[in-house]
Image (cartoon, rainbow, N blue to C red; front, side):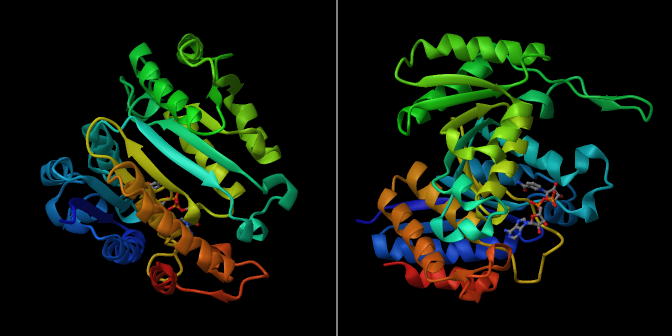
Amino acid sequence: MSKTYKISIIKGDGIGPEIIDEAIKVLDKVAEICDFKLVYKEYLMGGIAIDTVGVPLPQETIDGVLDSDACLFGSIGGPKWDNLPRELRAETGLLKFREAMGVYANLRPAVIYDELINASTLKADVIKGVDIMVVRELIGGIYFGQPRGNDGERAYNTMVYTKSEIIRIGKKAFEIAKTRDNRLCSVDKANVLEVSQLWRDTINELSTDYPEVELTHMYVDNAAMQLVRNPKQFDVIVTGNIFGDILSDTASMVVGSIGLLPSASTGDKTAIYEPIHGSAPDITGLGIANPIATIESVAMMLKYSLNQEEAALKIQAAIKKALVEGYRTKDIASFDAKEVLTTEQMGEMIKNNLV
Ligand code: NAD
């Protein structure tokens, strides 16, 4: 009998519904080919939840996602909700959601497709062969630290990590490095921040359990520069919440577009799969959003949460075929594009490429 998986869906705001619809099309087709079943249930979060039920993260969403095998997430937020009090903001809901799911490890692969080398703003010889995994700590650091506040004259946030939080993410990063090229670069700001010194000392202590992994350390300002200067030097990068947020956006431009980068947020409960980009209000409704980051996120979901690695590989092959044949969305269209497709056409193309 074929297996059935419960998938919670959060489309969110802006381009979220547009890209999730395409990802579901692809997921349905691959499920048919690989003979497993999917039951979807949609939940509200972000601006649409504020408009519908008055809060950015309804309890029903937390309960529903906890009861599912995996969560596919679009994006939330937008200018419409930016002036609400902070506790009602869409982004506050997202942080609470990640905390409720305990998803401490955010895996953000950045791999260059040879076909898209011309879509990057960097030179071909700098980016050819780039294959980086950014492991970002997701539920600690300055985005969560207390106290925080703003009285109109003075505003403050607290960057805090406990040793156990660093050990948890560090172990994950070393384990991932072991499945790749055995190289781990830990990024911090230990020359200035006490919290980074504890980070560095703890990662050093952990490294004795992983003698096969070559560990290096880099300050975050240098890492930002090195990612653009010579991205191929990196295999796995492990870093805290805010540094990982910024560095993975830099990595996205190395490989061509933010519309290409997927992510998996994993912990001890239901994992969340989402593109690294936001709700892109500037292009919402224009039909030009690139759905590939979300479709790649589905491939990560199949691999990490549903144990359907063959289906994941099929999706990646279908994306590759579309790119090899010269099909592009607007954000990755360079002079060598055969045809520039809409969001929906790209989703359809990838679906039809599945075999
Ligand atoms: P963004 O990632 O939404 O957009 C940055 C730029 O990249 C824009 O020019 C956008 O058009 C482009 N872009 C993003 N995704 C694309 C895609 N799939 N295809 C083509 N182009 C794409 O970041 P922003 O503008 O800083 O934020 C917009 C809103 O999204 C804000 O409210 C922010 O808080 C929210 N946000 C949400 C998440 C999330 O839901 N996880 C993440 C980041 C930002």
